Length: 191
Image 1 (cartoon, rainbow, N blue to C red):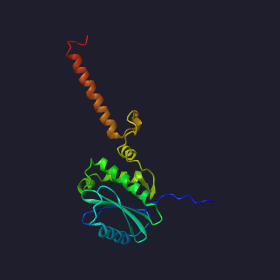
Image 2 (image 1 turned 120 degrees about the vertical axis):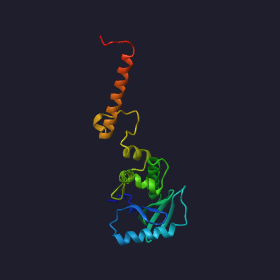
Image 3 (image 1 turned 45 degrees about the vertical axis):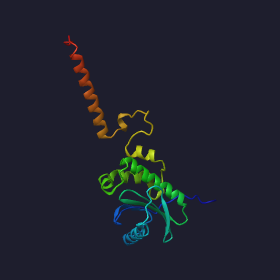
């Protein structure tokens, strides 16, 4: 029986331009000193490289790392040396494109920290314990924002979050108020 190979990601790291961690997720069980050493190595090897348009690939300590630059930060995905770097680039592009879409192109340190919940939800939608779950940025955006992937689909009230349900109720209330105001302006006394 042949072994099924499932693509695996060792870590996702986002560093600012000084090499400080903005956020990171490690799926391979490495300890804090090993994490810090990897982040320092990643920063040293990539501080002079700008990868704003395409992802760059490098080999670090028997690990493949791919990275892409935002305005004030760099996104890194690392994987086992046997992993296909195109798969890692696909994961990186999905996460980067989703974050860029969610933050309206403002992939900078301040904006990302202000919207950290969206970033973490994005990572959780794409990766589950290091296993790749989704590579379509539009599908990830719709899940993070809790919208239907197909805009033609109507949401039922059970599918709405509390804030969405309250917003829908407010909109319907204001609509009914404007309709009743329009009817009373026609000379209708209600008799």
